Image (cartoon, rainbow, N blue to C red; front, side, top):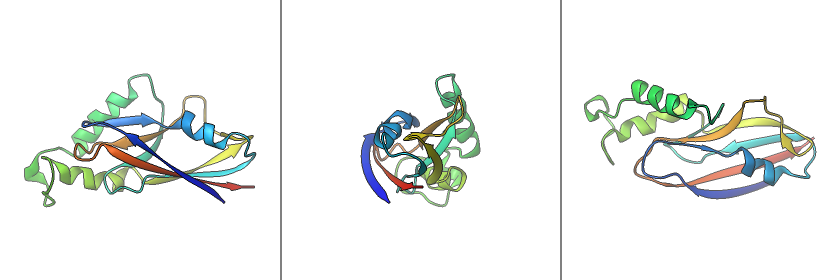
Length: 135
């Protein structure tokens, strides 16, 4: 199994960062297998979704409705207002996913992209771990 990590800066507001090209760049020349994408964070997750059509804003709206930033809702209260919501996100958006790889590229559907979903305003530095298991 091959593995690597990379860091990225997501900012100080809700972020939905497309990782697809970066992952495909790392997979180039590796053939067929499986790629696991993992975000080792308690307040971010990995999702498979369409990007560039307004879906990122729709996702932010849904996350804000499901996990309001109102501090009166959360028992967990350290960090910025509503930070408890950030800690609940990985129960809804998994911290990892495994995607088939064909010919050194993610075998995604036409409109699918792998994204890092990060609502956390307290930590803009993120790490993503990629693992490839050849078949």
